[in-house]
Each structure stands twice: as structure tokens, then as C-alpha cells.
Image (tube, rainbow over all chains, first blue to last red; front, side, top):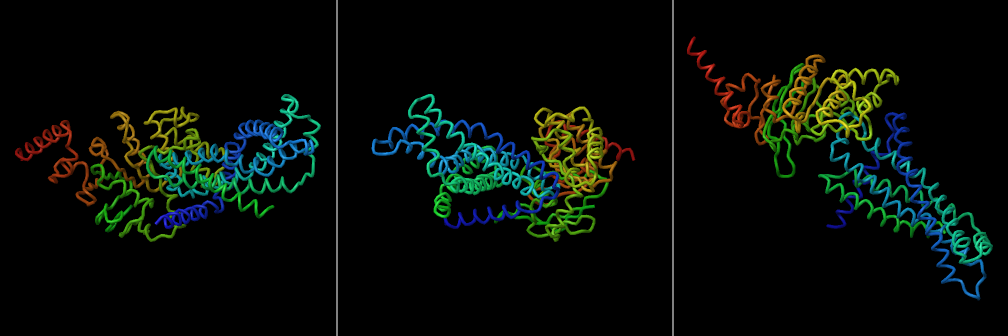
Amino acid sequence: MLILKYLNTLGRYILLMGRSFARPERMRMFLKQYTKEMSALGVDSIGIVLLISFFIGAVICIQMKLNIQSPWMPRWVSGYTTREILLLEFSSSIMCLILAGKVGSNIASELGTMRVTQQIDALEIMGVNSANYLILPKILGLVTLMPFLVIFSSATGILGAYGTAYIGHILSPEDLTLGLQHSFNAWFMWMSIIKSLVFAFIIASVSSFFGYTVEGGSVEVGKASTDAVVSSSVLILFSDVFLTQLLS
Amino acid sequence: MIEVKHLYKSFGDKEVLKDINAVFEDGKTNLIIGQSGSGKTVLMKNLVGLLTPTSGNVLYDGRNFVAMSKEEKVQMRREMGMIFQSAALFDSLNVLENVMFPLDMFSKMNYRERVRRAQECLDRVNLGDAQLKYPGEISGGMQKRVAIARAIVLNPKYLFCDEPNSGLDPHTSLVIDELLSSITKEYNITTIINTHDMNSVMGIGENILFIYQGNNEWQGTKDDVMGATNEKLNDLVFASDLFKRVKEVEMNKLRQAQANR
């Protein structure tokens, strides 16, 4: 029965995506929505991304220095491991998990409220493909801005690591720079960006699905918001395993 | 003109609408009345295509809406306007943008023409001064008037109103009723209003369909209501003391007139 329920949900999700990925009725209106969503979902998330990345970058650097560094290892190892963690996992996967909470709940509650206040019905009555008008700009808007958020996150994380060197004097800035530059593989940056694109799609589409299909009132909107965050997070972690295996 | 023929709607085992037959004419305010849970909203949702009937047909000027393809229904919906119980204005758009929305989506007018048309409609509902306000900043009655302006901006042939007076004070309800009635005449629209506001019934009910437990129980005009012998209809319409007294007075007048003859 449980499998049947999941298959049913998957089928409804695919159908909704089918309706969403149609040609927009009015390109002008689509571009207006697309710009608005890029601002609401991407630009408005820059602050939290920078804040979290700075402190996590600093914390990773401290942990590496205190727990990994030993007299038998080169002095650049802390910087090197900090960079690898930031590029490979934190700036893409963990940052997307955090954004699943912020952006996912935002999308689900917005669409859920539109559903229960009959705004989506109003669109349908007008003859507008509501899924296409509301969901497609959200997905494309987040997918467009996510790579920038990942790059900002990596850069700010490294700044945080420098903070521990210059302000906290945990390690010398020269050792950190040496580590950050050691055996740099540019593919890791691309890998991070590719992963983030997939995660952005998961966050926007899954949250839209839960919000768009709400039935009931405010309690159901709240539940949809929670379900959106939980499901997006689980799917991000799940796909991270496959993507890491595939891209490494 | 909208014709409903042998319309049935079930949800699982529960039959909500049973053999509904009705004709809603052009240029008239057609009312669907009934108690809460009688199936009024379900009937309206079937008419506009938000629900699909289990069986039966809905004809828009002879065109069978139920048998239309998805694309044809989308085209057909552009001839419809709908006012929802909650007004259903878009929160993120101001009043002018809300009214302009259907024009932005479907008209080939340029920006100036779209603004002018939206302003005309807002003036028609006496809201010319509230253009830049957001739905959250205006009263319920004003929201309903914005919804009316949005519904008529594309000159629809058919106007549907789901309990337009719900949550409004009697005076504002009267304003909305008069507005809907005059717009219906002015544009010669087929207007269908879903209501259990008895002031609306007695004020603008040119063609009234009474639904009881999903059945087409009674159909007539507001003048027919006064002399109606249908007990279920009388229980609904004359439920309040005020309306009971009005009916008594009217019936006495009628009896006296008959006696004088």
C-alpha cells in the first residue's frame, strides 16, 4: 500500500512537471515572473548563504587544524582539506540543504496559500495554465541563480578560513594559502556547480508540488511546507550519493 | 445562454448532484440558492470546468462544454469571468495590476491601452482611487468590487459569482448586488450567482434555481418566491423572523386583492 502511495505521488509529480514545462502563454509575463523569482528565491538568499558559509569555513579550518594537523603532516594540509570540504560538499550539498529549508518552505507556503485562497482556481478560470505560470519561473529562477550562490558560498567559506588565520591566529595565512592552492582541481568546482543545479531543481519542483497540491486550510499549508522541506532534503541527500559517484 | 442537462456529480459513493436541469438566460441575474452543503458550489464548479460532471451536459450557447477538449475548454474559459467567495485577488499585485492581469495574459493591447481599460473597469466599480493599493490594504467589500472589475475586464459573455456577499455587511451586499445586476444588463452577460443571501434573492433574483440535497427542487423568479408553496424553499427563504413577517404582509395583500376582485 505504501509503495502504491509513493508511486501515486510520483505520478502526480511527473504530471505536474509536464504541465509546468509547457511553452509559456505570454513570454513577457513569463520573463516578469522569472525575474521576480530569481530575486525572491536567489538574490534574497545571498545574505544567509554568505553568513553561514563564512562561519562554517572558519569552523572547518579550525577543526582541521586542531584535529587533522600533526607533526608528521605538511603544514598546508589544513588549508587543503578545508578547500576540498568546501568545494566538494559544503558549498553544494550542505548549502542546498540549508536552502531547502529557506526556499522550499517559502515556495510551498506561497503556493499552498494561493491554492486555499482560490487564487490558483482564479488563474485556471481565466484559462491560464497555472502550473506553467507559477512553477516554471520558480524552477528556472532558482536553477539560474544556484551556481552563483555556490560560488559565493565557496569564496566566503575561504574568507572565513582566512579569518581564523588573520584574526584567530590558528594557523599562518601563508600555510593556509599554500594549502588552498595545493593540487587544485578545477573540475571539483564544476562538480559542485553541476550538483547544485540538480539540487536547485529538486528544491523548487518538489516544494512547488507540495504547495500546489494542498487541499484544506492553513493547517494543511503548514504541513505541506514541512513535507516540502523534509522531502527535498531527503532527495538532495539521496541524489548526492549518486551524483558524487557519477561525477568523481 | 447556459443550459444544464441531466447533470450528475458524485464523489466516490456520495452523489452530490442528482439530475440537475436548468436554463440560465442572457442579460439576467440567475441565482442558485440552497442551504450550505446542498451542492451549489459543486454545481458552479461543474459549470466552469473546475470539476467534471459524472454525467450530463453543460451547453454554452449550444456548445457542449463537457465534451470539449482541454484546449477548447481553455479557449472557452476566456469568455468567462468568475468572482470567488474570497475574491481570490493576487496578493502580490496591486489593485490595478490585478485588474490588468487578464489583459496582460490575453489581450494584444499595448501597455497604455491595458491601463486605460483596467482604469475604466475600476471606475465602473467606483474604485478609481484605490488603484495602487494591495488587496491586504482594502476592505472585503472593496476586494469583491476589484474582483468584479477583474472579471469584466475582458468583456466576458458569462459571469459566475460564488457567494459574492459572503462576509459583507447588508449595505455593502446591496451595493455588490446592484453592481452585478447593472453590469449584467449593461453588457448583456449571462450571470449566475451562487448565494444564500435572501436579500439578494428578493432584490435581484430574475431567475432562481433552488437546490435541495443535490436535487433541482424549484425554479422561478423573485416574484414567484412570495407565493411559492414549496415548503423546503419557504424554510430557506423565510427562515428569519423579518422575512416571515414580510411574507405574511405580502400574502395578506394578495388575499385582499383577490377578495376585492
